[in-house]
Image (cartoon, rainbow, N blue to C red):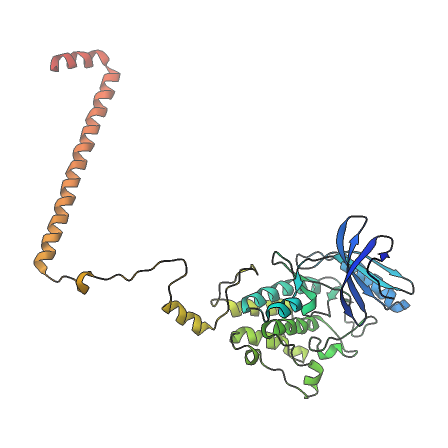
Length: 371
C-alpha cells in the first residue's frame, strides 16, 4: 500500500509530496520530525521474505556510502504487509528530465561535466567491497542542485554484488532505452550495466531523445541513431564516447566508469575551457566554427584597434631617419649627464654629513676657514 500525502511513517517521517512513481514503488519528499530536516523516502512494495532479507543487507551497505555525488542513506526499515523503505538526503533542485522539458538538450560542456561527476560516483560504488551497482541510472535519477552540484539518486534497485555472482534474488526492473540487454533477464549485471545506463542518460541529455531500446537492437529490430545525427553541434569524440558506452554487448563498452570519464574529458581537452558552474556555461559550437569566429571577432570585454601608419605609409627618407635618431641620442646623452651630476652631488653631501658626525670639531674649523 503506497504512502499518502500527510501520512506519518514510522511515527517520524511526515510525507509532503510524491516525487516520482515506478513499477516497484514511489519516492516521496518528507520531513523528519525528529530532526526537522527534509528527506527523500524511497518505497519498495515487494515484502516477501527473500526480498526483505536482501533489502536489509543492501540497505546496510548503502548506508555506509560516502561520496560528494551521492546522497546519504540515513535509515532503512520494513513494515510487514506494507513495504520496505530507504530514507535518504533530499536533494533540492531539478533532475535532468525536468531540465530537458524546461529548456531542451544540454550544452556539450554541461553533459561532460555531469558525466564525469556520475562516473566518479560509480567508480566509488563499484570499487566497494562488496561492489554496489545502481542499475537504474536515467535522467530522472540525476539531480542538479541550485549550486550546480550533481547527484546520482534513487537507490531503490541498487544491488550488492558478491564475488562472481551471476544471478540475484531481488528487485530488478527495466527502463526502456536506459537498461542494457543483460538487465532484461537473468544474465549477470556488473559495472558495465551502469556504464550503459549512464551512456543512455548522456545521450538523452545531448539530443533530447532516448536511445533505441537495447533489446530491440540486440534482436536487429532497431539501430542506435548516432548522436550527431540528432544534434550536429556535438563534437565527434564526445559522440563516439557516448555511443561506445551504449554498445549492446558488454565487452564492447567501457569496462569501467573511470575509462568512460577519461574519454569524455579527453574529448573536451583542447577544444573547450570547461566551466564547472552549470549556471554559466559557454554555448557549444563546432571546433571549426569556433576557430573561424575567433579569427573574425575580437574577444569580448577587450577593445581592439587596428594599428595604422600615418598617411598609410611608413616614411622611407634615410635623412629623416638619421636626424630622428640623432635627436634621440642627444636626449639620452643629456639625460644621462644630468643623472650623473645629481648622483655625484648626493655622494658629496653624504660624505660631508658623515665626516661632520665623526669629527665635529675639525668640521667646524674647516667650515670657518672656507666661509
